[in-house]
Length: 150
Image (cartoon, rainbow, N blue to C red; front, side, top):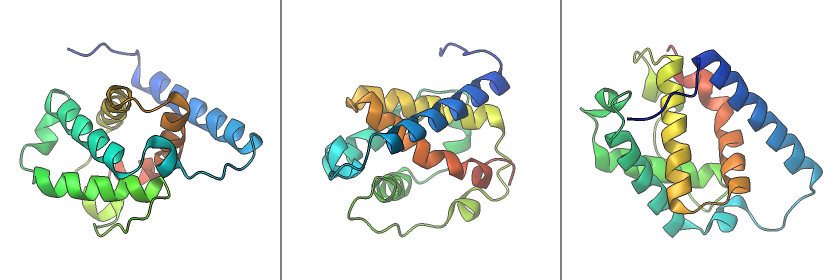
């Protein structure tokens, strides 16, 4: 059983504030010649990350019911493409946009936050550095409105 991090609104605000601070600090640090994709270790690491993410979802009763009818192989393939694209890797995302994927699902904030927690745990298990994790989360944060409540 996963521990609660407190009230969902408090948790969401703290995540968004943290992501904003990290994005600001990263912009102050100057431009790196290495892409985030290369920083985290490329395709093999992304594939391991997504595999770990799938395992986190599979053991999370807060969100698992949302995925029971999903095609896991397709989810894995599109998630790897999506993460690669977000990390400035040499990939092309061939899936639907976030609005199309989540339309009619009525995902709530608690479920969204649970998925973020699962992703963070998967990044830890994959061995992705905290600074790279923060960059990934900062790039994913703008997708929140495209996922919740549509």
